[in-house]
Length: 332
Ligand code: UDP
Ligand code: MG
Image (tube, rainbow, N blue to C red; front, side, top):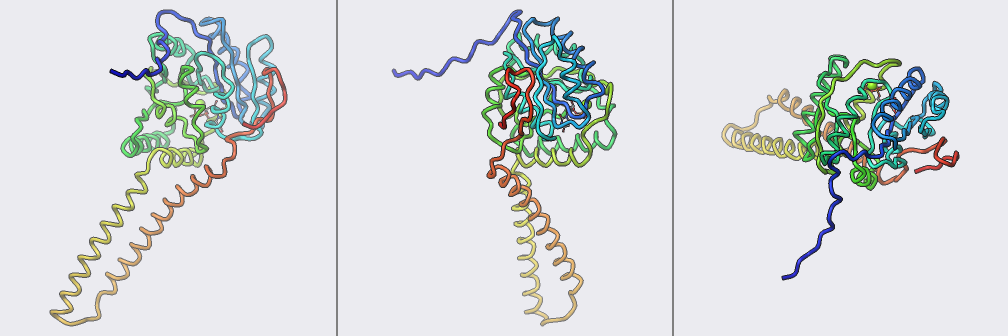
């Protein structure tokens, strides 16, 4: 009998293996608190392993975040990647992943909202053999109620419409094994919804509940329009349901109009023609007009994504690199 040999996956790390850790910190206008944050983070990581490094991705900050990082990096394994403008958190994380060299990669925000001690638990779970360990927020109290409501509704829609299971209260705060990082780096798409991509690649994953803290300095960078943009990227990248919805709507409306046509023909045959019916006509025309505009709009959203993909522009442009051996930047 012929046997097919599949490549054997790397044995899961168990026991007390101490991995080399690369921490990716996306930062946009975080000058006020970043130095304290980096000191605290490095202190904590040094307690976990002797082999760690931190990559700060300055996402086009205009408040001197980059200079603060350089000042704070003296004697610490901190590297800085400055993007040429603000490309958004998803792009900043992608840029960090491209440069990360650790056996495990931890993504963490620069604002102390994700407590350092959770990283210990991430590592413990990785030692148990999990490839991806993600933080699950147990409290959303720090978010304004409207954001909480919209976020919950968005994830409810996404889980119903998409075949990928994306946990609602998980964010970018997570540990990724090298295998996951390699898989993520192979994804060529331009419209990047990281929370979806993490789970699309699969692998053994585990949630670690944690309490989201208060921001130590600065303010949240996500306003309504940014969140809406991210939600549209998420929905259109991970679900074709909005398109299918209009097929169903079209079928339903056509079915109804056929029935209505049958009714009018029968009535005309039996009772002759009469003039009334303007109201019905006006409602039908305006309703259908609305439905058509909406469906064209949704189609447009997808076409816009296709356009972005086809242009094939890089997700980000690196302007400067500090601590990478060469200080000249290049696009990726
Ligand atoms: N961030 C970024 N680029 C952006 C927006 C945000 O790199 O365009 C960073 C930001 O500096 C922070 C992290 O992403 O380190 C999370 O942002 P924020 O704290 O504003 O989000 P929230 O906690 O409100 O979800
Ligand atoms: Mg935050």
